[in-house]
Image: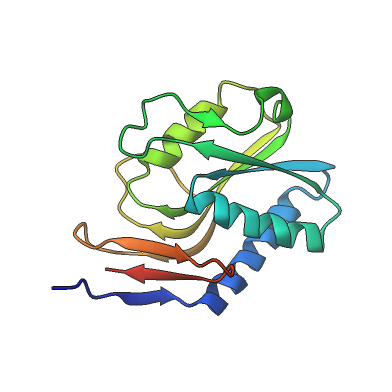
Amino acid sequence: MTEEKNIILTSDQILQKTKRIAYQIYESNSSEESIVIAGIAENGYIFASQIAKFLEEISPLKINMCKVIINKKNPLQSIQTSIDSSEYQNKSLVLVDDVLNSGATLIYGIKHFLDVPLKQFKTAVLVNRNHKKYPVKADYKGVSLSTTLQEHVAVEFTEDGKASAFLM
C-alpha cells in the first residue's frame, strides 16, 4: 500500500512564498551590509539557497551562505557549520529549514548559534506545523498548517530547482 500524498504547495506557490520571505528578510535587514543565511542540511539548505538567490536579486546585501549539519535523529550530537563562527559573529543571521515539525531541529540549531554574539537572529521555514514539542517559532514562514500528529509533511526538491510540499 502506497502512502497517499496531498499537495500542500505547488512549485509556483513555493516560488512565490520564497520571494515573499526574501522581501521580509530584506525589510528586516535593510540597514545591514551583509547577512548570513544558515540552512539546515539538506532541504533547509536548498530552501535557504533559493531565498539567498532572491535576496541577491532584490537587495544590495552581501549574502554569506552557511550549511548547518544536525543529526535530526539525535540533535544533541555536535552540530557542524560550513563556515567558521567568526564569519557570523556580530552579524544578522537567519536560520532556515524546510519544515518546522516538532521544533527539535530548529531549537538545537538556535542553541548552536547562541554561543556566538549575533546582531540579529531570525528563523525561516517553508511549512510551519502548529503542534510543536518545543517553544520555538518561525519569524518568516511560507505556510502554517494545523495537522494531526499522525500526518507527515514532506518537501521535495528536484534537480531543476523546483519543489513541492506534501501532506502524507
